[in-house]
Image (cartoon, rainbow, N blue to C red; front, side, top):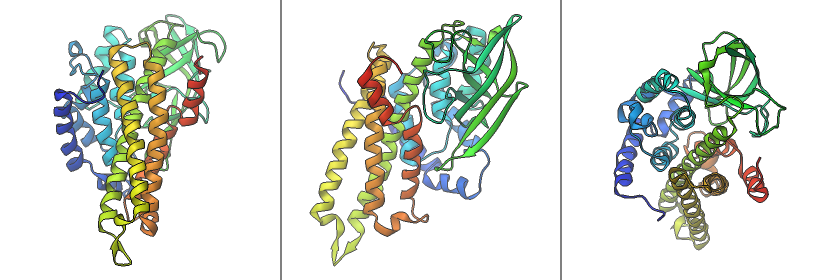
Length: 378
């Protein structure tokens, strides 16, 4: 499959790009940060996402969505990254929607309309340790009558403090690292027994520690099969890894565009600094690395949309390549800006902070390089 967008996808990009640039540019992030906004994103903007159809891009048409694919979701995420737009898009419109695809009709009907409308926020409660180790699922879900009782803690739950819905991976049988015995649950955050502690991250977004102390759910909260949720969990991880890769490509694009503008304007010793060959070489190297990351990311999304057996591997390739390329982009951006790049008054530093958070989400480049080398699980 060719690694470029088709006409319909280009049309979507032409719609998303000006919307993000006008409604949620970097100044929007700065305003939220300076106001110490407790949510970390704008609910009004999230509803606008719904009005534009962005939140329903992955929802099947039969469920009221646009019925598009991960390439289209990636187009939205790239523009989110380019503008550093704070939003729960990746956890809600990508991860949670993918999880709910495996749910029964009543569960879909309970949550998807709110997501499509931009009224509902969902969060992925999957990690339990300081580093991303999704193979380990230790949170217990014990059978109780016709339902389950959940006990344990999840960490690094992006926008978990604002979520209406938590997608929780739990251990219904076996030991913590067993492949089988994992079940996914759709848990309303308002359920008694849930305690959420939000922590502001380097990029001024929020992630939460979520404690579930004997949270009681009936059987209708189960997504998919009891004890058989590992395959769905792996699928959810693949799609959010590809999504995070798209956002990192956008972050890299935003940082490099700002840097190229600076190189064309800043003068030193009577010359525009972009005329110096050393800086031209660095810019050319960055461009080539970004193109490789963009191609790897698009390949992963195409594989996911095609249902390819290689989709999981391709998502790890994309996450590793996008992590390395975007890391290079933001470092070069700060360095080429010189002293001003280290100041809070200039926006370039925001790109570095967002890249660092995205690089860690769902596994950093080292995690995925190791995973690809082993090719035998997590």
